[in-house]
Image 1: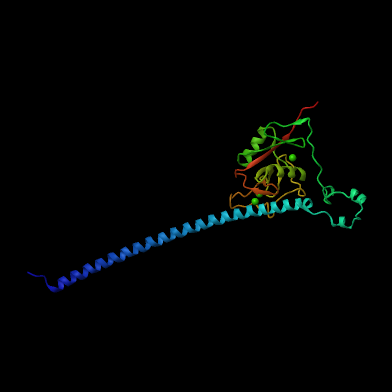
Image 2: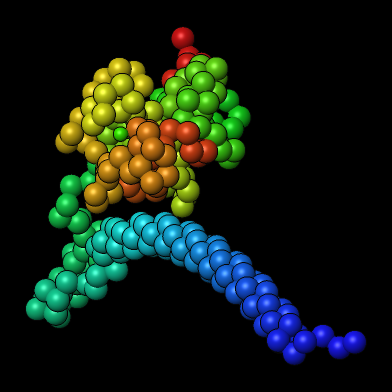
Length: 257
Ligand SMILES: [Ca+2]
Ligand SMILES: [Ca+2]
Ligand SMILES: [Ca+2]
C-alpha cells in the first residue's frame, strides 16, 4: 500500500527545513569561528607591529647616540686636521724667517685644554682596575641591575663612579669604548632630584645628559627610570632593574710613606 502523496511531500519539506536549519547553524558557527580567527590574527599583527615599533625606537635612539658620538669626535679632531694657516704664504721667503716659523703641530688651539692628570707613582691599583688621578676604576664586563652593581662596588671597597669633572668624564670616555655603564647617580629617593651615591646633589653645571634626557620613560618599566648610565659621551636615565655594565671607583693604594 502506497503512502498518500501529501504525506510524502510534507516529509520531504520537513527534511529540507531540518537540513536548511542545520546549514544555517553550521554557517553561523563557521562565521563565528572565522571572526575569532580574524580577531586573533589582527591581535597578532598588532602585537608584532608594536614590537617592531619599540625595536625601531630603540634603534633610532642608538643611532642618535652614535651620530652625536661621531659629531663630537669630529669636532674634537678638527684642530688637528686643519691645514697650516694661510698666513705662512705672506711670510718673506728669506731662509732665516722660515727658521723661526713654527710648524703646524706646535700651533696652540684657541680652546683651553683641561689640566693634564698625572698618575702618582706612589699610588697603585689592583689587577683589573685602571689607575687615573689617584683613583682606581673597574669597568665590569658582566651586566646586572643598578643595586646589584653598586653592592659589588661596595664589596670591593669603592662605590659606583661619581663624575667630579669634565676631565674624569673624558677619561671614562676614552676607556669605556662604545658600551653603556651604570654610574653612581640616581633620583630614586625623589623623582627629578638626582643625587650621587655619596649623598651629594648633582651639580647642574656639570652634567652630560643626552638631549631630552632624563625622561623617566615608562614604556620599559612602569616605575620609570631612576638610575643613570653613561655612554662614551652622554648620560641617560634607565630603569634601575635593567642589566647594565657598571663602573666602580675607589681611592688608589698609597705605597709611599
Ligand atoms: Ca670621581
Ligand atoms: Ca626618574
Ligand atoms: Ca631615559
